[in-house]
Amino acid sequence: MLSAAAVLGGCTVLSRLLGLARDAATAWLLGAGPVADALTAAMRLPHILRRMLAEGSLSMSLTARLAGRGDAAETAAVVRALSWRLALALLAACAAAAVLAGPFMRLLAPGLDAASADLAGRLLRACLPYMPAAGMAALCMAVLHARERFLVPALSPVLFNVCVLTAALLAVLGGADATQTAFALALGMSGGGCAQWLLQQGAVARLLPRPRLRFRVRRTAVRPSLPPREAWRLLCQLPAGALAASAPQLAMLAAMWPASLAGEGNMAALYYAERLLELPLGLVGACLGMAALPRLSRLARAGRWRDFALLRDASLRWAVRLSLPAAAGLAAVSGPLVDCLLGHGAFDANAVRLTALAVLAYVPCLPACAVSRCLLAGCHAAGRRRLTALTGLLTPLLALGTGLLLIRVLDAPVRGAGAAAAASFALWVQTALLWGLGRHAAASGEARRRAWRFGSVQAAAAALVGLAAGATYLLTAGLPSWGRLGLSVAAGLLVWPPALLFMRDRDICRLGRRLLRRQ
Image (spheres, rainbow, N blue to C red):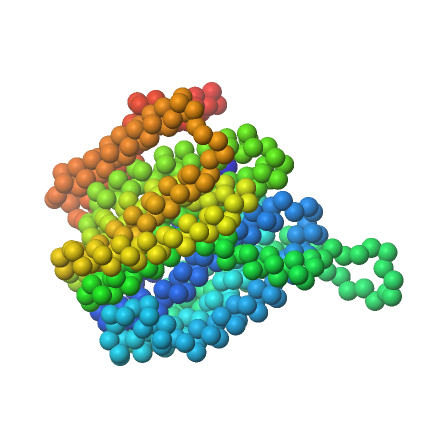
């Protein structure tokens, strides 16, 4: 599991760094003004679909179903049956979104004025070709993950970011104004989605057998196929399976509504804060959950529930172990991080302040998202999709209601951060519900004591990481901002392993003994 997660994590780091470069370029070109708010509102739907479809949420539901299939011929039959049906459904949704782009933007961001809402609707139409491409890419990703081929799906977001950065570069070289630059970024998103799909489609074509045309009246062997009714039933079950996995994205989308009512610039601030969280989110929770899912599905189908529980608990321990220090370090350097990455060009000091506050409010959701992805992998593998779908439906509603309440009681400078805090609270509620659903039996007293000891050790190590990062930034006041930020991150990374070893973390000590034996 850790080997597969390492492959996914390495590609995720490259993808997220390119994503940070993409967001830094957008912030430099557009800042946090009305055009940036319109582009943020327009790209919400494609970004949600990108995470629901092309970054593991929908593919998680499909992977759990495809991992237990028989040979490659049977998997190919399922893929052929789903491909044209999924494409037809996505094209219909794309056409409906193109017709209803204006009302959808007024519903998603009621705080935008008439001109910004009209611009957001036109930008949304430019992004819509991404929808069918992302859906087909998700199907290819599920096939590759089910066969434990992780490299090509992990590299596809890199290609997406390269396409968007190329579009931004062409806009700068062409001397485009802010509105034209926004349209170039929207078209770059559509091109990046098509590139992702074509890359993964080539890998699937090499992996699965192709159907052969036979011109004989009678055939001695029948090619495996999926009955049409079963194919449509499987397709209709996919949204429920993807709903719980995409709860973080839906909660952050719901937080955009109260943020649009909190004042100008808050929507863009929440968007950039969410983008800064994508590196630790993708590196920890998504990689571990996706790496464990194929084997969890096979263990569940074989009825090996003891091995199932051992693998699931191992993924949960590593999710907590990696997400808590990441959250502490991000909280310690949130302000300098936003200033160094985004505080250039049109991104003024007020935009930096709003984004830094949103990052601090989003930090608590990092361990919740990491743990919930591993819990969701276990629930999908065990076939508990309806109950997990209910948690995914409850999460955005809770984020929306809590966010509307917080922007009423908080002062104007921190209302946007209140909307982000509402999303963090909703995601912790979902994690608690998934934890209750994922247990097959009540834990013993010894198991609860081990869990409390493990949690206290990880919390103490995370606190040391945050203190080391913050103290290093304060003690290096004479250096440039980039140097201070780099030293702070390095200090947090150096403190974390010795802290776990000193506190006798079981898994870290075991890995250390294995390394010593190999040496």
